[in-house]
Amino acid sequence: MSVKHHGVRFYHRRRGVSAWLLSGADLSCWFSSEEKELRYFSLLLGFCLSLPVAAIQVTVTIPPLAGMIQPYLTDEDELVVLLEPGASPHGFQFRPSHLVALQHADLLLTLGNSVDTWIEKPLKQRLSEAQAAGQAIRVIAMQKLPGLVVFPRSTRQQRHLSNQSVTDEQDHHEHEHEHEQEALDPHIWLSIANARLMVSAIAAQLTRLQPDRATEIAAITQQLQADYQRLDQQMTDWLAPVRQQPYLLLHDGYQYFEQAYGLQHLGVVQVSDELKPSIKQVLALRKIIQSTGARCVFKEPQFSDRQLHYIIQGLAVEVGELDPLGQGQLDYRQLMRQMAQAVVQCLQPSPK
Image (cartoon, rainbow, N blue to C red; front, top):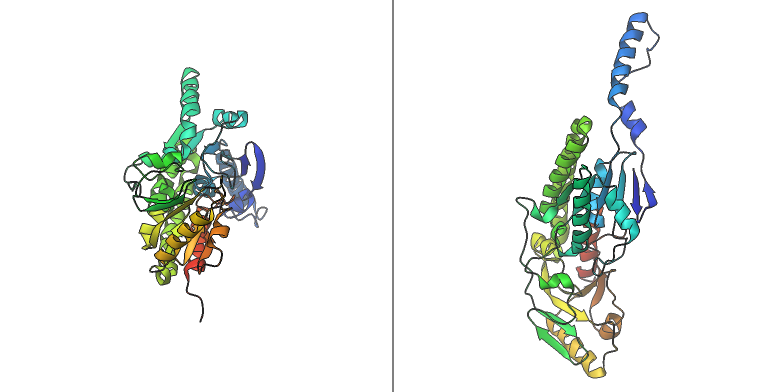
């Protein structure tokens, strides 16, 4: 399987030969007798005739969706991730290479919410073109899946540094991202329970696209479901010792993760990177951070934290990093595992 960002291959995985060797055909006695030779030849012929499966191209909007579908794909399939590793989906601009990936996609995975709202217009155009040409493109908009848990947007207190003063407010402010204006929290993939539903939907569409692989796809699904369930329990155990440890965020995007594991999120500190804070502003924000008793402030690689270290200098608070999108990580299980480990590392009490 090849994986591409903007049409550039950066990852490759092989498994075809090993899968054939594990098929159960024992060729060690190939020439032991005419009868066995004929029987093995018939078996091999039937097996080979079933081998050709039309390769597909899967296009996904964000890396976590790639991490869910990647275990299903063969060497011949192609996976295109529209959002580059480390990039923010906010302000994403479509390029000609993105349109090419959309035109060649047999299956498109989207969240179907404001995180990847930038796909809506080109997708609508692509679906219209495909219909006119008698072509088919399958689309899974994850947020529309039956049974998916979707939370209202958090109304927890947000504290941010503006060019006038440090203010406390319950809802919107001038530096909120576009998706923070909607009523629902779009970070649906940060729930393993939701991810299990997404994997089932992916498997159903892949089975329709590649019916000759139905048995293999079902086996992979069963393994992934077991892996996700086991990981969920492991993360519950890992995070249990730090549940009562308070922390702050630079971006309120972890409600699904926090509710699943009972974490004590105190609020969001929004710090503008476009201005240098005055001494009065720094002191006010430092007072806010101290008053919460936060042990850690979590940043994200997709958003700037240039002012954060200056503001918290000398405070008894750690800086951790959470990456909800994954830095090119093509395994959803690893993405979630790394998030749990980052939380534990920053929140665990220091040895006395």
